[in-house]
Length: 170
Image (cartoon, rainbow, N blue to C red; front, side, top):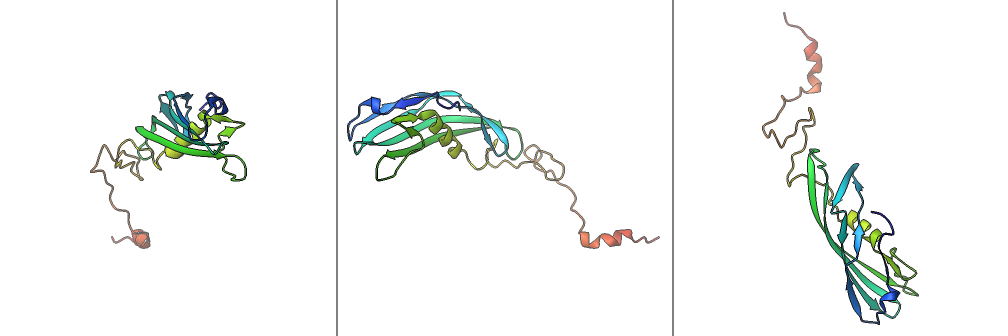
Protein backbone atom coordinates (compact mmCIF):
# COMPACT_ATOMS: atom_id res chain seq x y z
CA UNK A 1 0.00 0.00 0.00
CA UNK A 2 1.35 3.38 -0.84
CA UNK A 3 1.80 5.17 2.44
CA UNK A 4 0.25 8.58 2.90
CA UNK A 5 -2.08 8.46 -0.11
CA UNK A 6 -5.18 8.95 2.07
CA UNK A 7 -5.20 11.12 5.16
CA UNK A 8 -8.23 12.61 6.86
CA UNK A 9 -8.07 15.83 8.87
CA UNK A 10 -10.14 14.73 11.87
CA UNK A 11 -10.15 18.17 13.49
CA UNK A 12 -11.29 19.65 10.17
CA UNK A 13 -14.50 17.58 10.31
CA UNK A 14 -15.80 19.94 13.01
CA UNK A 15 -17.50 17.20 15.03
CA UNK A 16 -18.71 17.88 18.58
CA UNK A 17 -18.80 15.27 21.36
CA UNK A 18 -21.26 12.51 20.45
CA UNK A 19 -21.35 13.45 16.78
CA UNK A 20 -20.22 11.11 14.04
CA UNK A 21 -19.73 11.02 10.31
CA UNK A 22 -19.35 8.32 7.67
CA UNK A 23 -16.74 8.91 4.98
CA UNK A 24 -15.71 6.87 1.94
CA UNK A 25 -12.10 7.72 1.12
CA UNK A 26 -10.32 5.81 -1.63
CA UNK A 27 -7.12 4.01 -0.64
CA UNK A 28 -4.52 2.29 -2.77
CA UNK A 29 -3.49 -1.14 -1.56
CA UNK A 30 -0.13 -2.52 -2.61
CA UNK A 31 1.18 -6.04 -2.86
CA UNK A 32 1.18 -8.02 0.38
CA UNK A 33 4.01 -10.45 1.15
CA UNK A 34 2.78 -13.26 3.36
CA UNK A 35 4.39 -16.62 4.12
CA UNK A 36 7.09 -15.98 1.53
CA UNK A 37 4.53 -15.40 -1.24
CA UNK A 38 3.30 -12.19 -2.86
CA UNK A 39 -0.44 -11.53 -2.93
CA UNK A 40 -2.10 -8.89 -5.06
CA UNK A 41 -5.16 -7.09 -3.65
CA UNK A 42 -8.03 -6.79 -6.13
CA UNK A 43 -9.04 -4.04 -6.65
CA UNK A 44 -5.87 -2.11 -5.84
CA UNK A 45 -7.80 1.14 -5.43
CA UNK A 46 -10.98 0.84 -3.45
CA UNK A 47 -13.33 2.98 -1.42
CA UNK A 48 -13.36 2.12 2.28
CA UNK A 49 -16.08 2.88 4.79
CA UNK A 50 -14.76 5.06 7.58
CA UNK A 51 -16.93 5.88 10.59
CA UNK A 52 -15.59 8.71 12.76
CA UNK A 53 -17.12 9.67 16.13
CA UNK A 54 -15.98 12.40 18.49
CA UNK A 55 -15.61 11.30 22.11
CA UNK A 56 -14.68 13.31 25.21
CA UNK A 57 -13.79 16.53 23.43
CA UNK A 58 -10.33 15.50 22.28
CA UNK A 59 -10.85 11.81 21.46
CA UNK A 60 -11.99 9.74 18.50
CA UNK A 61 -13.68 6.39 17.97
CA UNK A 62 -12.85 5.06 14.50
CA UNK A 63 -14.08 2.15 12.40
CA UNK A 64 -12.73 1.03 9.02
CA UNK A 65 -14.45 -1.54 6.79
CA UNK A 66 -13.84 -2.81 3.26
CA UNK A 67 -13.98 -5.92 1.12
CA UNK A 68 -11.02 -6.99 -1.01
CA UNK A 69 -9.72 -10.13 -2.69
CA UNK A 70 -6.17 -11.41 -2.57
CA UNK A 71 -4.75 -13.22 -5.56
CA UNK A 72 -1.58 -15.26 -5.49
CA UNK A 73 -0.42 -18.84 -5.07
CA UNK A 74 -2.01 -21.47 -2.86
CA UNK A 75 0.19 -22.21 0.15
CA UNK A 76 -0.36 -25.95 -0.24
CA UNK A 77 -0.36 -26.77 -3.96
CA UNK A 78 1.09 -23.55 -5.49
CA UNK A 79 -1.83 -23.22 -7.93
CA UNK A 80 -3.56 -19.82 -8.31
CA UNK A 81 -5.53 -18.83 -5.21
CA UNK A 82 -8.24 -16.21 -4.72
CA UNK A 83 -9.21 -15.26 -1.15
CA UNK A 84 -12.07 -12.81 -0.48
CA UNK A 85 -11.61 -10.87 2.76
CA UNK A 86 -14.05 -8.80 4.78
CA UNK A 87 -12.01 -6.31 6.80
CA UNK A 88 -13.57 -4.59 9.82
CA UNK A 89 -11.15 -2.73 12.14
CA UNK A 90 -11.61 -0.35 15.05
CA UNK A 91 -9.30 2.19 16.63
CA UNK A 92 -9.57 4.75 19.42
CA UNK A 93 -7.59 7.89 20.05
CA UNK A 94 -7.87 9.64 23.40
CA UNK A 95 -5.09 12.10 24.06
CA UNK A 96 -4.19 13.11 27.56
CA UNK A 97 -4.07 11.08 30.75
CA UNK A 98 -5.87 8.00 29.40
CA UNK A 99 -2.93 7.13 27.17
CA UNK A 100 -5.09 5.52 24.45
CA UNK A 101 -3.26 6.40 21.27
CA UNK A 102 -3.78 5.12 17.77
CA UNK A 103 -0.63 4.64 15.68
CA UNK A 104 -2.61 6.00 12.71
CA UNK A 105 -3.54 9.40 14.21
CA UNK A 106 -0.87 12.12 14.25
CA UNK A 107 -1.56 15.78 14.98
CA UNK A 108 -5.29 15.38 14.33
CA UNK A 109 -4.82 13.55 11.01
CA UNK A 110 -5.78 9.94 10.36
CA UNK A 111 -3.59 7.95 7.96
CA UNK A 112 -6.30 5.79 6.40
CA UNK A 113 -3.91 4.13 3.94
CA UNK A 114 -1.56 2.83 6.65
CA UNK A 115 -4.51 1.63 8.74
CA UNK A 116 -6.07 -0.17 5.75
CA UNK A 117 -2.73 -1.85 4.93
CA UNK A 118 -2.30 -3.12 8.49
CA UNK A 119 -5.96 -4.15 8.83
CA UNK A 120 -5.67 -6.16 5.60
CA UNK A 121 -2.52 -7.91 6.85
CA UNK A 122 -4.31 -8.87 10.07
CA UNK A 123 -7.33 -10.21 8.16
CA UNK A 124 -5.34 -12.67 6.02
CA UNK A 125 -6.03 -16.26 7.11
CA UNK A 126 -3.19 -18.47 8.37
CA UNK A 127 -3.10 -20.15 4.94
CA UNK A 128 -4.24 -18.75 1.61
CA UNK A 129 -5.68 -21.72 -0.28
CA UNK A 130 -6.96 -22.32 -3.81
CA UNK A 131 -9.97 -24.15 -2.34
CA UNK A 132 -11.19 -25.38 0.99
CA UNK A 133 -9.60 -28.72 1.75
CA UNK A 134 -6.73 -28.35 -0.73
CA UNK A 135 -4.66 -31.54 -0.54
CA UNK A 136 -1.37 -29.88 -1.50
CA UNK A 137 1.65 -31.55 -3.05
CA UNK A 138 3.05 -35.04 -2.53
CA UNK A 139 6.00 -34.69 -0.15
CA UNK A 140 7.96 -37.34 -2.07
CA UNK A 141 7.54 -36.40 -5.71
CA UNK A 142 5.71 -33.04 -5.75
CA UNK A 143 2.62 -34.28 -7.61
CA UNK A 144 -0.52 -32.17 -7.13
CA UNK A 145 -2.74 -34.34 -4.93
CA UNK A 146 -5.85 -32.37 -5.98
CA UNK A 147 -5.43 -33.67 -9.54
CA UNK A 148 -4.68 -37.28 -8.60
CA UNK A 149 -6.50 -38.27 -5.42
CA UNK A 150 -5.37 -41.91 -5.80
CA UNK A 151 -1.69 -40.90 -5.91
CA UNK A 152 0.49 -43.05 -3.68
CA UNK A 153 3.97 -44.52 -3.35
CA UNK A 154 5.02 -47.92 -2.07
CA UNK A 155 5.70 -47.74 1.65
CA UNK A 156 9.27 -47.03 2.69
CA UNK A 157 11.22 -49.89 4.10
CA UNK A 158 11.79 -49.78 7.81
CA UNK A 159 15.39 -48.50 8.16
CA UNK A 160 15.96 -50.90 11.06
CA UNK A 161 15.93 -53.75 8.54
CA UNK A 162 18.32 -52.14 6.03
CA UNK A 163 21.27 -54.38 6.95
CA UNK A 164 19.30 -57.41 5.76
CA UNK A 165 19.31 -55.97 2.22
CA UNK A 166 23.05 -56.53 2.18
CA UNK A 167 22.66 -60.28 2.69
CA UNK A 168 22.52 -62.47 -0.37
CA UNK A 169 20.89 -65.82 -0.51
CA UNK A 170 22.06 -67.57 -3.69
